[in-house]
Each structure stands twice: as C-alpha cells, then as structure tokens.
Length: 371
Image (cartoon, rainbow, N blue to C red; front, top):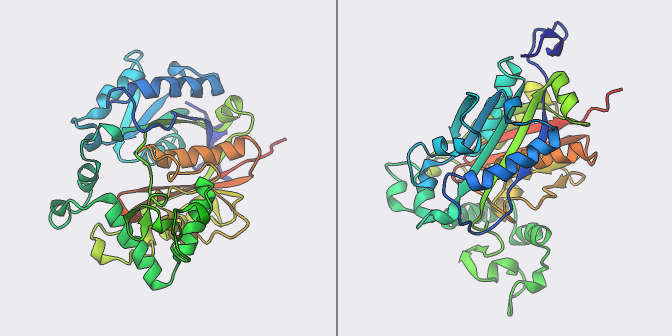
C-alpha cells in the first residue's frame, strides 16, 4: 500500500488522490455468441487496459464489477465472470448488482481509504440473451404495484417524455436536435411524409412520442477502467484523470410519487460531488451523459446546469450503443479519455440506473499539468 506521502489534504489526513489511468470497452454489437458471464468480452478489454498502463493482473490490488443476475439468468453470475481475472494469486474482489459506475464508486472509496493502490473496475451485460428484455428490466420496478404489470421499458420512457413535453420543459424539436447530433440524421430524413413538428417521432413510432431514433439499441458489451492512487497514477499514465469529486443519489421507486419531467437525484448527486471536492460541476469542458433516451439528455443537462459551451457526450453515448451495466461506467471512461488526450481539463461523467433516471451518479475529473 502507498505511504502517507500520497495522502491528500493539508495535514496529510484526508483521502488519497485517485485517478483514472486506463479505459477500454468491447465493440457495440446487437448480439455476441459468448456466454452470459461476459468472460469472452472481458478478457480482451482487460488486455487493452493492461497495455495502456503497463500493468498485469498481478498488479491490481482490488477488483470490483457491476452486472445483473436477472439479465444473465443465473444466480451469482459475477462469480463465473471471475474466470476472466484468474484464480491465482488470490484477489480482493467485490461486486454491485447494477451499472459498474457504482462499482467505480466503491473502488474510489477503497483506494481513497488506503486499502488499495490500484483497482480494476469492470461491467458487462448480454442483453441479447434475454428472451424478454422488457420483463427482465421490469424486475427492477416496485415488486408489488409495478413489476406485475410488466411494463415495457420504452413505454415507461414515453411517459417521461410526454410529461416533459406537456410541462413545457422541452419540446419534440429539442428531442430531434439531440437525435440529430447523436445519429447524424437530419429531421428531413425522419421518414416519408413526416410533417412539421413531428420529426423523428413520426419515424416508426416505438411508443409515442418516442420514435426509433429516440430509444437505445439492444447492445451486448463490456467495459473496464483502471484506477490508481497518487504517485502510482503518475507512474502509470502521462496525464491521469484525477477524480475531483463524486456523488450519487436515488429517487423514489414509486413512479407516481415523483415528477418524471425532472430528476432530483441528478441534482443531488451533483451537489454531493461538489461537496466532495469537485466544486462547480457545471464548470467542465466535456460532459459524458448516460442518457439512453433523447429526452433524458434534456432533463439531465437541465438538472446539471450545463451551458452551451460544454461539449455533450462526444462519444455518442447510450443512444448509439447501450451495453447494459457497463454504459454508465463507459461515460466516466470517456470523460477520462478526454483528459488523457488533452481535449479537456475538466470533464463530467454521469451514470444512471433503474427506470426513468431513478438513480444517478456524477463524477468530475480533472487534468493537472504538473511540473
């Protein structure tokens, strides 16, 4: 473990500095021939992270993953994913049932507390293996009043989009602008006979007002991020992406108990990240937002107070490729990449979990040109 010289704070008693030093993800594909434990996708992703940092698996102090037993169709599915790590030497390992962005939160705390110098965080999901993806995802809803109705994921999102439009917080045209940026398709290409004001929503409606370009694709995928503390991060990466602050919050699981056109948990997560050391979370160059639906980007941008000068999700985001349980971690990884490559000095990574932006995490990363 690192010594006191890596401790942060003026008196050396605070949490240590932690940075993202490596990031890789699997290709976005609608279906893979591999098993639901993700081993076939994870192994090459780990290899690319190791290549970036010069580490190997023996150089990782802590492993933490995010996945879903419901999606994999087996209990303790993450156990079989450990085949991608290797059984020896014995490892310190943990897991979250959800997007791996929350596994990164755990790893950040673990390193910051001095229990590890390095961590590899990974997430995986094989959505194509689900015979009924809507039913699988409905298992995360309230088990008494909502799951038994088996609502479709796009239909639930349509309720949120309609609430936002009807409240005047955004318009169909605002959603079209998001879609055009992500997919590079103009409104004129939205479909033959699309009238004014209809835009993408008229192009093969999935669940009005959502059209096929407003919703995420079914995507199999995996992602990994390597974290390191203090001087170790400086050794492993030419320009580490330092985690200035991170926060997470959750809204009520009762869909009828909150205003779907807003997200108090996004706002609260940003406040907690600011309190943890990030400062003004809106003062960033790049913001990678985990927003699987076009209208959700509009909600999150508003709650975070992101101005026109912030580059929004240059990676394309979850509307382009939505690997379940790793898409949120990817947003933090892409935010870190913007720091690594010198395209940003401050970047925000956002992740969401559950239906309708129920749970949210905000991380602010910084590049420091140390001399």
